Length: 313
Image: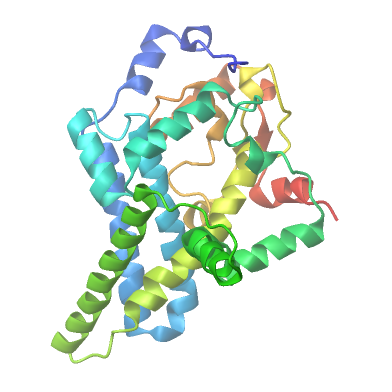
């Protein structure tokens, strides 16, 4: 087994520089979680009051759904809150949930980044791909096909096989719990939108479908794909240099709002110093620039530029 090479922070930062970077705040992570839900809430209200804005709301909410996953990712590294108990509770109930299972998987990705044993290697290995193939993937994302396959693919496979008399795959207890939680949560949410609408004299029963499920099934799927491509596509397999195991992608204001929230674009810095909270990554990037390190790192000038390399014409 080939473990990925590691970076020693002392090789890049003085003790005075590293100490404030590595400190985990008791409020900054919580403020990001609150910000994420506030943006989702305001975009939802915008879509409910002015249905013509629903396409924009879908993009905003879908990006913040990714944001909840990014903040859960911080919690998986113990960086969302300095108190471990608070860190776990917030990740489980206010972010994406399933943090313990996700941590076990994700730390394997860091341990074997871009090596043969990396469980995420399958996401980056196919690149570059043709522009036509990339477009088909985006169409599947934006039409909900990717989400449906992820959510109900195993059930659909088993139903088809059962109809043909073919063997079916076992459904594990964790999957049953996941589907049950999905159905119960959505039933309560649909009821909540209906009751809120009735209290305000509005017909809002459709709100959950249009302003949570639709973003989750479409825009969230696409930006998750774009994020995965930007982070590791075209990075060499078995890359020995730990400064090139992942890619940082420069992002403008629109990209940060709709594609790469909460500093997720600083992915090279994250792999170099994986326990830094996400809000410290821009400062780490700035310091590395002053020390002339950025030239050695894997950095893309923008998301469109990266995608043109990953899916050339």
